[in-house]
Picture 1 (cartoon, rainbow, N blue to C red):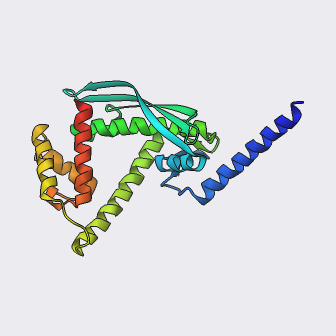
Picture 2 (picture 1 turned 180 degrees about the horizontal axis):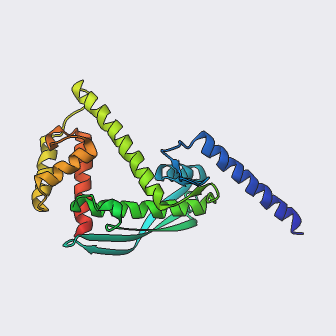
Picture 3 (picture 1 turned 135 degrees about the vertical axis):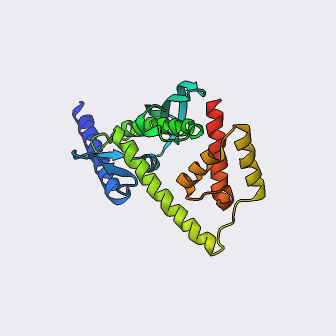
Length: 238
């Protein structure tokens, strides 16, 4: 009685694996959506690749804060996040993943204090999300999640950020990009004053993120992004 059902399940599993392999080969981009783990035959899944897999399977996502440990005087930030994936049509939960991150991890010691809270929170969310996607898509035999994926992905994001900044600089020279507005500048200066951020701290972030030395050199899009980062970081630290 159970043989036809078992055979059907096996065929479905094979078809799902074939679809996943084809999707990886035809859609996902190496070093952007996933990267090779040195000395292994596995790949680590990046956030952009996880998002594409969610689109393929029709999954939505939401995040829940499990725990938070914040000491703005030290400063120290730690977050534990749960990612929940659900069927976008039915709302049924298909998988959950958990991710943790704290500001004492070696890679985050180089960041300015006001920026660390936001970075650590985003990394915890990213780890939880990738964990959930690997479970939901049954792709752990193809991809892995390892500490090295965070480093590889950060390098990839930085490289893409540099390319974007170079493109924007060229567009600015040709007059195609609007520079930061006076209203945006006033808001940035207000946030700096409110949270006692030094000019050097801000310049360090501007050079790292947008390859500029002054807020007045930002495009309106970059200024909007930087305002969001300042607001999120100081909110999480409070």
